[in-house]
Length: 219
Ligand code: C5P
Image 1: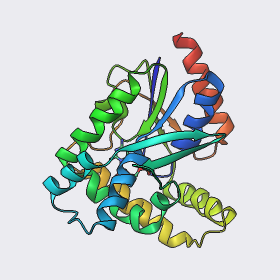
Image 2 (image 1 turned 90 degrees about the vertical axis):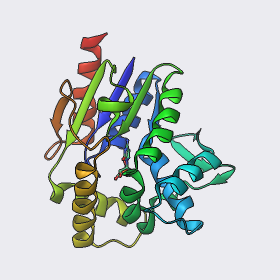
Image 3 (image 1 turned 135 degrees about the vertical axis):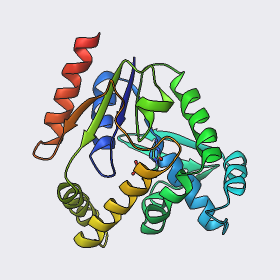
Image 4 (image 1 turned 90 degrees about the horizontal axis):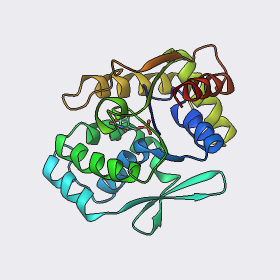
C-alpha cells in the first residue's frame, strides 16, 4: 500500500508519517529532505539557484540516500551525513527556489518513484498525491493555521536548543507556502481524491489515529 501525505510547510506531515510508518512497518520517505539536500549542495557549490540546467546536473552528480538509525532517519549526500544541516535557515529559505524548476523536479520525482517501488511506503511532500504517486491507495492533505504551524516549529526549535523567532517563522512559512503553491510545475495543491485533515486544534496522536482508521478501512 502507498500512502501519500501532502500539505503546506510545518503542518506536521513528517511527524505523523513517521508514526504511521512505524506502526505499520512501512518505509517512510521524506521527499522534502531530498529537495533540501540538493539545495544544501547548491549553496555549498555556489550554484546559481535560477540556473535550472546547473541544478539538474548537480542532482545527477550527487547521490541522496536515507539510513534509519533507531528512531532517526539520517540523510546523506554521497557519504556525508547532512541530517542536521539540511534543516538550517539558509537551506529552508532557499529550498523553494530550487524546487520550482521543472528539470530538478523530474530528477527527484524519478528517484522518489523508484524508492516507492520497494513496497509499502508512507511518503510526505507537496506533490505526492498529485504527481509522484497518483495511484496511492490513500492520500492525505494536512493543513493547519500559519499561527499554529509557527508555534509548533518554534517549540520544536527551543526544545532542540536552536535559536528561534516566532514572527520570523511565520514569515518564513508564509513565503515558502506562497512559492510552493504558485510555481508552475507540480504546485502544492490538494489532490481531488485526498482527504483533508485540519490539525489546528488536534494533537499529533489524534491525527495519526484518524489516518490509521482510514488506512484500515482501505485494507
Ligand atoms: O517538507 P519540507 O518542508 O522539508 O520541504 C522543503 C521544501 O521542499 C518545500 O518547501 C518545497 O519547496 C520542496 N518540496 C517540494 N515537493 C515535495 C517536497 C518538498 O517542492 N514533494
